[in-house]
Amino acid sequence: MNKTKFLGPKVYLLIFPAIALVIVSQCITFPAKFNWLLVIFLISIAIIERIYMHLFNKLWLPYFIIVIGLIIFAKHSILYSFFYLVPDAVIIWLKRKVSIWYDLLPSLSISLITIVVGNSFYNWTSHSYISRLETLLLLFVINWVLAYFFSFFESGKLTTSPVVSTFIPSWFEIGVIFPYLAVFNYFSYPVVMSAFLAYLIVVKVCHSRRMQVNETHVRQLISLIGTKLQLQILLMDLGSIKGVYYPNKRLIVIDHKLDYPEQLDTLVHEWIHCELRKYKKSPLFLEEIWVTILEAVISWYYVFNLKRIFTAGGYK
Ligand SMILES: [Zn+2]
Image 1 (tube, rainbow, N blue to C red):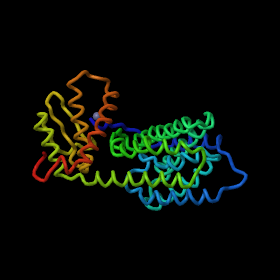
Image 2: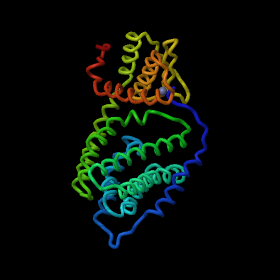
Image 3: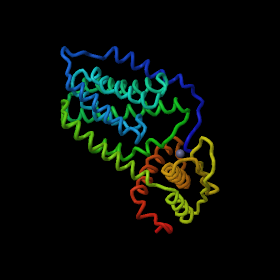
Image 4: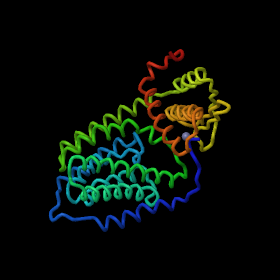
C-alpha cells in the first residue's frame, strides 16, 4: 500500500510553533546596526519565489535553504530569516487564506526550527568548507523530516509522492547547489542569486516534463508492464488509498482519481513492491525506503523519455 491511515488530530501541528518559540527566544541575536540592503533583498526573494510556488508544495521544496544557507554562515541569521519567512507567509495567506494556526504558523515554525538548528550547528563547527557543506545537508534533512511529520499530522496519511515529485530538484540541490554555496563563508548577493535562478530553472523544466504525462502514457505503461511481466493492472476508486498490490495474484490496483503523473508513480511503486516480494522479505519500513528511491529513479526515467518510450500507437 502506498498510504496508511492514521486518525491524528491536527492539534499536534501546534507542537511546531511551541518548539520554535522556545528555541528562537533562546538563540536569536540582534545586530547593532541593521543591514537594510539584506532586508530588501530577502523580501524581494520571498516575493519572486512565491510567484513560482504553484509548481510544488512549499514544504516539500526547501529551496529557501539556498537563501537561508548563506545567511547561516553570516551573523544574526535567525533575525534576518524573519524578513524572508514573514513576507512569504503573508503572501500565502493573502493568496490562499489558509488556516493560520494549522497551516501558516506550523510551516513558518518548521523553517525557523531548521534555521536555528543549522545556525547552532555551524557555530559549533570549525567553519571549514566541509562544515558548511555538512550544515547545508543538515538543513535539508531536518526540513524534510519536519515536513514529513507536518504532512502526517495534517492529513493523517503517509505518502511517498513528495519524495518522488521533487527527486531531481533535490539531487540538483545536494549535488550542485550545496557544493557551490559552501565555497563562500559570507552572504554574497551574486552567489545567492545565481544559485537561486539555476534552481528555479531546474524546477521549472522538471515540472513541465511531469505535466506532459497523459492518459495514453499511463495506459501504455500498464500494457507494457502487464504483458512483459504478467501482471494484471486495474484502475478503480480506492478511496484515500493510492494503490494496492497482491504479489501472489500478480495484481495491482491504482486509484483512478489520481492525476496522470501520480498514476504513473503509483503504478511504478506497486510494481516494484511486487518484484521485491519475489526475493527475500525485508522489514516493511526498509522495503518502503528502497521502493521509494527506485520509484523516483524509474518514474523520472519515464517522464524524461516519454517520446522515446511511448508512441501514439503503442510502446516500442
Ligand atoms: Zn509502498
